[in-house]
Length: 331
Image (cartoon, rainbow, N blue to C red; front, side, top):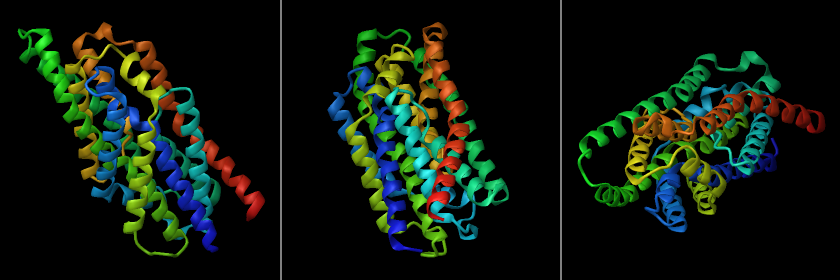
């Protein structure tokens, strides 16, 4: 294995992490920006710092990504499979970012890795139990987040039913600064680990290491790439998340951030990769439904749902194409 091929993997993985950072910045700060709890540039800088800290804190999700979809040590073209997966995931992230669609970077990466493994080693190389566990987490977590957002908003409505709207908004606007920090930290604990996991996958496939432990240089590199990407900001997606689903007030933003951050951090503790985009969007939908069901722009929600549904099949197909191109040109 030529060393430069591994450096290509590292470069692509960190590029994915960078793109994930600006693609998913909206997840952490859309509500606090839309309610003017934080100025956009301050929110982005805060999100970058908290993403960095979150990315350095845990490694369980990275190990799940590294060995959950397939066993990299058993793959003949493991490094090439990773390259194809990363190219497909990056391409889909850029396409959805350009059109302002809050699709899932996690779905893109998982779908791409599965597609590249199938193209490079056959369906039998997929770790059925591990892959199924990952899909369950990706599918169930939005439902939990919707429920959490709905319940939190319902409770807050009951508690502050007789308070003046001005006082409530002023208090929760300040509270949103804390929840935005919590949101950004939890985002870093889960999303940055996916790039770490894919780098470790390549290191094991290349025989550089034999276990799924994440080297320190991988953790620091991935955390830095995500933080830098976050600092760029994904303004198109922020607009969709923060204004187009329903009109968010500070109390709504507080509930949405708390609900989704709690779900993401719980998943991280359980070593499960989840889609932060799906979780946060679902929490916003739950909060909006508790506020007033008709207040939610369900047409926008439907278009977002379509992007969720098609991401994995499209990235599976894209990764297969990229692998076949790599095989035809270099293998």
